[in-house]
Length: 437
Image (cartoon, rainbow, N blue to C red; front, top):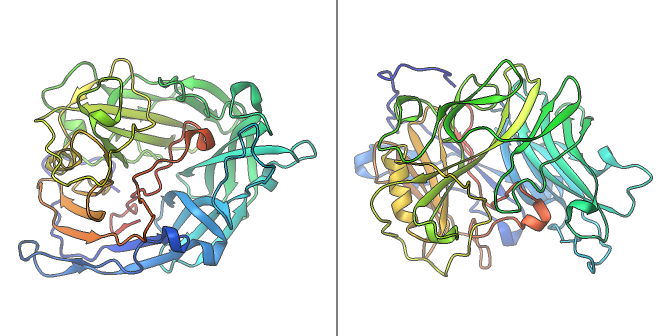
């Protein structure tokens, strides 16, 4: 991935190369199609997006309801978080049964889909006092050197409920991808940082000192970069309403790499949410991304919740929705900035979503293609791939989900997962932009 580029040297996608699709399948009720073929329109030229690899998480790793997908920095591996053999139960309720759910981190080959390592997470924390406790996890991806994965955890006394006073332990697990061993950095996990409706920020973890500073909240911005003081700073602030995007966050620049990149924009994998699904009287659509970010030397790590209201014409909602979308569980900054969509593709998705519902979106590293799934499209969900300079998809594939599978129409329960949202369907590009998970 290029970390800098001339504004005039934007690579143009030809749509002539094959893009491999990694399809994650857990159980019969949560299975995507085994093969995803993208027929090209005549305007897009000859060729197709046909190559696919299926990751069978339940069969190979006993991993049910996989969430938090990430490519390794070299693109050779894919990591997924999930529960062993069955989907997570809400055991944080006071009257919930004493049934435990075991969590694991699984690493698969991005080339073959074969399981490379399954890492049970509970034993990394277990001691004599935790037999009756309940721990929740969220995976936040790989370190820049590809050696470790970051997993935040929060342990509650059970029963007792997900209340701040019920926390017995929390912090960060740095899990070795090679051995499965972990370094534990205790402290604030950020579990409750945004559940009140307004984000107070996330911890910054100092890897060398094995310590954490709570509630880091950078100024709202369109672009960020790590400074010398062990914290990412806002290099392009977002205040008020912008009539046009600055070049650093516009369509002529790459989106940037928060995994050790020197500078990155807020246009990371995220969601476009209609204003009516946000509540609070917000009339504009919102783009939001939860961005795990590492310093280039892998010695500091934190998370940024980046959000911007998208200006533009009123949403048309080009696809009928199957039901009234609920309110999305995302906090809205009190002084939310507004700006135009990054490119024509994002604007098309904003119009597609309309005033209600949401879509998952992800740009390739060069920022020249946008993949998206409108989560309430009817009659079926579809994966669209657009040139960022065009509103019309160059390729579309229907996601033939089984009956009862809502795809990305639901979010992970915040009572279970805390302030790290887990949409059931998320899009990720490989670092070289050749594959889409």
